[in-house]
Length: 309
Ligand SMILES: [Zn+2]
Image (cartoon, rainbow, N blue to C red; front, side, top):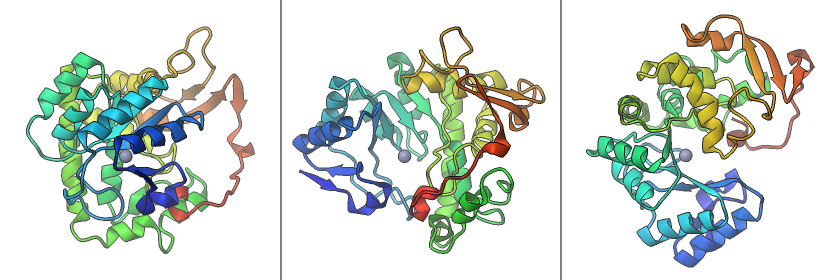
C-alpha cells in the first residue's frame, strides 16, 4: 500500500507513507520518475514535525527499509536516512544505505560502534547541528531571526515568526526546548566520535526546515561543527568536497579543479584561523559569472509558511 502522507502533505506531492514492500517500490518508482538524484527516508521512532521528541512512532519495518534501499539503488539513486537512535542508524547501514542525516541525536548505547561500521562501509554522516539549536534557542532570538536581519530577504525572515508559523508553534510545545538542547549535546558528542572513527562527514543545515533559511544558517552550522572538534579545514572540506560527493556531484563541484564548475566565494579574512571569516563574503562567482548581490531579487512564489521558512 502507498498513501499520500496526510501529516506531511503540505511538503508536496513526493512524500509517501508506505506500509508494504510493494508500496515501497512504487514510491521509489514515482519519485525516480521526477529525475531526482536521491531519496530520503524517515526511519525513526521519533516523531518529526511539530511535537516534542517522543519516541513512540513506528520506524520502518526491516523488509520495507531493505526494499526502499534496493529499489533506489537499482535506479542509481542515493539513499539518505533521517534517523535518531544508534540502533536506527545501524539498521540503515546494514540495509546498505548511503548517508545518515541529523546525527545520532537520541540517547542510546552503541553510537561509537555504529560510527565505526559507517566508516568501514563508507556511509557518510551529515550532522545538521544548527537545527537543534534553532529549535531550543526560541528566546530571545527566535530561530536566529534577529541574527538574520539584513542577511536574508525580509519576506523570508518575517515568515519565520508569522502568525501560524511552525516556529511559533514550536515555542508552545512543552518540553521541546529541553529535548532539542539535549539532542544537540548528544549530536555534538557523536560528531566527535564520528571524526575519531574516520567517518566521511558532510555539512548540511537542514535548510527548508522551520526557521532554517537556506544560506544564512550555514555559518552557524560550520561553527558548531568546529566546536564539536573539527578543525576549520575539516569543516570547510565537509562543506565543499564532501558535500559534493555525498550528493553524487563530486565530478562537478566541491573543489577548485579544471573541468569543474567555477562556483567560488572570496572572503575577507582567514577562515582557517576563524571560520566566521566565511561570513565576510566579498565576491561570489557562480558558474564562472560574478554575482552582484544588489541585482538579485526575491521572486515570490506561492508557498505555505513551512515551505517558505
Ligand atoms: Zn530529516
